Image (tube, rainbow over all chains, first blue to last red):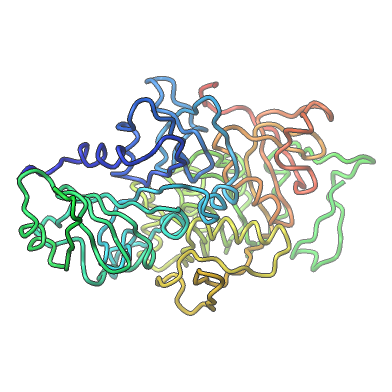
Length: 216
Length: 248
């Protein structure tokens, strides 16, 4: 079996973003998607601190401390881009104006519940940022994550054990092993990596999966 | 002229000492603009990380000495300057924010673990909307954000249309300290790039919005079509020397 690396997962997500889409990329792994957006498509990136039309990283020495993304990294603005205040920015999110948001996750449940903000540890300092707004707001919520934890447990679970970010909000999961849709009647495998059998994916996932008729 | 209600005056209207027979909100220094902040105030501080953080106003607030403050900001300070320095000086009793935990939030982390600061964690969009609601005179609002999560525990909920929602209340403040790019003496503001972030809504939600700007201009010099914060939301403006920031 050929697991995808992080860049390959990002490239796989990027393939599904259509021309003209408004997209928010979550902090961490999802920011890699920006590097893999297919040429020839005009995709408008939103950053929750108040930017539409986020461009690539500035050249070294060209950074501007007033122009950063939600991860507080320096970015640029594309021609046609716009700045706006935080309430407008989250109005775009909550008001279902964004076509996609792409988030990382600790766990996703079979019902599409998302846990990605808090490990629940008693001594952990909680921090949520915009994750809960993105989870309920975007028209489609895409999750990208590794399929298994470091100790080999499935991150796709019957019920999340970490505190929820949002309930029944995830539409599609991209992992290093598969692409899986969250449907009202359960999880449906859309794609698997080369050399992975459905039975093996089912065994690793530990939750009921269905095979889409055309899944490889 | 600057009319201000503050806890110091118990609701009576007082004139600030810069009274002049025309509207002039320009103050000579950050110290002068913050001199009347009492202990126990609720203060909104603009900025997202360092972008839009009013560093010189925060320095003046530290020097001014007000204590037992409630602070509203998206974060809880980065590294050792600005809001982090205010926390380090132990002037803050409580903070409302969405994302306190960062690689360089060590001063907050230490206070939090020692039980020396109260944290009200608010999802970022709910934080922004609660601030906006205060400025717009909204009594409360229902939002789908955080429904079914521990951040909605104990809150009223209601199903509206196809969405389960949580009741949230506005956040008012006594003062807002924000940073803008340019102002005139009426307090009209324009911002710079993503440093705008919380500035406009915090200006509207505080009884006294104090703004530091890089440049002040004559009335009429700001394009009325492009003014982001109209002066009605602003009480005091201070020009500070540009920082080391690289010009665009």
